Image (cartoon, rainbow, N blue to C red):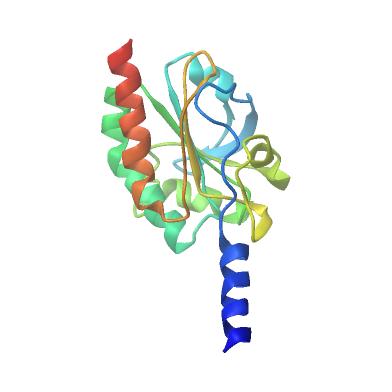
Length: 179
């Protein structure tokens, strides 16, 4: 029985996501990354996006996986609310980059409503301490809200995708209220 408990404990540690190092008040690293929106290639610049208002930067483990598809759909469905509150949304992943163009246009995923960017070698994820502990070449599921000045306003890190939209939308609305 003890070997089973040890194995379960070890598995839990390996699958536990890393805690996001960037906290509210930290400076968000600027980046530029290749990506897609509605199937069309683009280059996303965080610095340029911040000029328009707050940015929701959400990292997801891998394109075209069940949890990531669900999260993309939830963000797509909530885009009118993010836009109404002046926010830009960008999804970034280091996993399954060959699927990004497809999910960016898929009606059951991003629906072309926001860009998704490729994080080659998980370089951006490392800057944001959003690397999946079990697969360091993939992104963790971590969401940030970044102010126009480049300050982290909110961080939420949990592999379960169900609360990322509510968490980030709440932070965007709180930011808008304070302005």
